[in-house]
Amino acid sequence: MSTESKLAVVFPGQGSQSLGMMNGLIEIKPELKEVFATASELLSYDLLDVITSGPEEKLNQTEVTQPALLATSYATWLILKEHLKLKPTVFAGHSLGEYTALVCANVISFEDAITLVAERGRCMQRAVPEGVGAMAAILGLENEQVTQACTDAAQGEIVSAANFNSPGQIVIAGNNNAVVRAIDSAKEMGAKRAILLPVSVPSHCMLMKDAAVEFETALNKVSLHDAEIPVLQNVDAKPKSSSDEIRSALLEQLYMPVRWVDSVNNIKDSGVIKVIECGPGKVLSGLIKRIDRSFEIFSIQDRASLEKAVSS
Image (cartoon, rainbow, N blue to C red; front, side):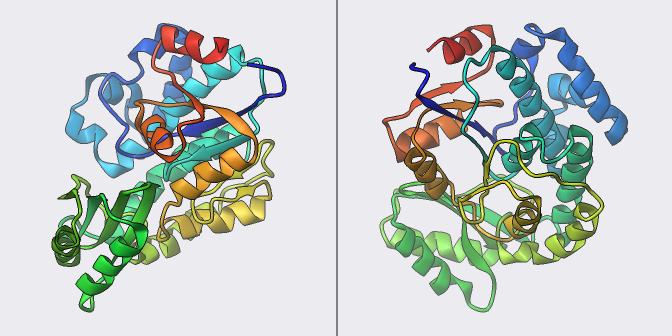
């Protein structure tokens, strides 16, 4: 890779978590345990123990998943940046991953971010009791078709596109019954698959508006700084460095859709040819390949994948 090449680093969101997701990385840098010790002190439970040993039901609770993913992805970044020969041009994160991007861009401290995302998870869960909301993946339809399916299915309730993940892969969210109706409508339109997702809160739809109002109190207590590296934010897929713009977009992110396709296209338009997924799993790598196959894409799970990512 030439010195003129540009690099983007992206951070995953909920759904990428798994038990043992730090095992291959702690081996590389045992000092990373301090990252989790700091988070554990703030959270009043042993975060690394939950990540390593479970139970899986606890790791998958929204208020635990969010700090677990943030800490794991941030720890991965601490390893990666020691080996990078090239400074990233831009950061981006999918949903919760946006907070990791902001920590890595020095917009927010790790300590503040851990506290903030744990509260974000609690606000989301309180806003919509379990069983009231739902999310579903719709595969094989155009954006306009999914939008129409949601409009037809609403019937006075809320259901809308929540994540534009890749062409033909859209996640919807809203009231449980409305989401089920939208699934039926999508199938009638010819969707390849339309399935409910195993989540406890309907993220990125207007049911989260109350969560955003409550979360604003916590967010306003935290100091944000201008980004050292621009961060593409989910609500409009545009790179931002201003702390004021970033703060406003974080609130909107709770109830507005994640525009991941637009984000990846804007990464491409900025001249980036190499993307490294910094965090557990390979969900974003798969989505990026579906959006634009011209990228060099890497994910980091262990020493071998780290060496591959930084040597190319």
